[in-house]
Image (cartoon, rainbow, N blue to C red; front, side):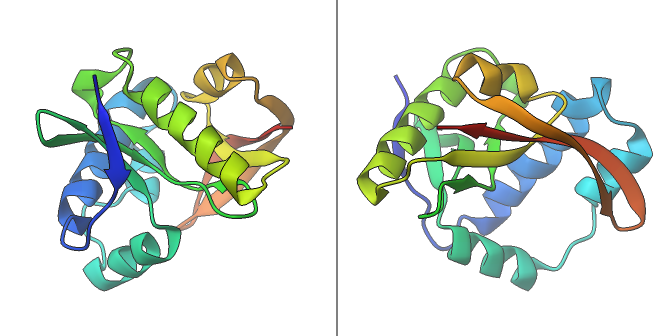
Length: 153
């Protein structure tokens, strides 16, 4: 249904737009406008964003050649990015990405997957066997956001 492949250089603006629109639309029930703007500001440094993606090497989910989600897993099991397009929420994109991350992590020899998970994404991660280690208050650009350190062993 969805093709999963490594992101390719040049896709940074597409992934940034998907990240921005997901935070500002999907997360609006759990985070204020001020919090969402701190998390995903309209203005951003494209070079910093590109460097972050190059370092994390995310996977993208494609539907009819369109990027509808992206996520990554590091060799230590940390999941930094996990975003699905607002029009594809609940349609299997997250499931396809999560299965790919878990399979990839196993190839890396990961014994513990962990992530800083938004209030919005917490039920999704719980569905895949992640448990809350602790609730966290993270300061981002001077604004405090609540999220959860979650892990799956």
